Image (spheres, rainbow, N blue to C red):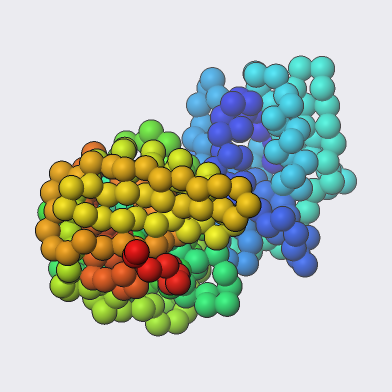
Length: 377
């Protein structure tokens, strides 16, 4: 293998696949990046036991020149750091006879011990006809508004994932850690998702893929096989293993009737939650006292102090109520909401409450309150 590539193009490619390199691995080959040059361009691949990321750079006289086809595996950590340290311009990558790769740019020359590309795992890419496409901008919004609610604990692996569920013309993403739930639905103009089964995708993988879309226009093609799911847009793709297990029923988690409903300004509530959180202590517990005229947030930290703040509400239906919740969880929801107004629906002091953006009926969030010994005086 012998190629010349623009340093910035190489940097972009490595950024896209870096999340696929494991921090440590029992298999040395997985700590490397596979480079494969062909007549049409250069493909970079990173792989661990659960995800494979690929980025393709097409041949172009000003960014990539293929002198010799071939493939090799270079230690990822060193390769990424070396390329980041190089000045802008062309970088030469040349495989030597002693299985070293020569990396040169200007007057700088590195030699890295490489590994055989034949030992690198081969990704089983699903057939393209077994799936559907989604607009990249819509896909990014769905992931941003849902994935944060997934669990980070491996005690229940299925809760670390995002449910991908289809129903005729609708695609729904949902995530829950057992205390909060987020859902987001997207409608499709054609019946392209009707035969796509419900699957659970690692939330971390979805988030990493969505972040790398940046400002790309176009769409992502999503295809499926027995145990993995494949995402592809332009030059970038991800193959992720699915999570086995039964995801909690979304319909059973969402309350159907409510005793108290209010509407509020999203930005005002977010600011108040952030201020109250400063004295919420290590448990992050914040109280909300709701009346027909206003809502009051309050929090206290032993031996430090307390805080209270009143917020205007636009509408009120039902009974006055005081509820306690994890302020960090509510803040995460408010940061994900894109609507300037929202509605909060309560079913009681200790029962889950629902948050719905006023201008985004396809999104909703549920938070389970915190039980306390507090009683109204």
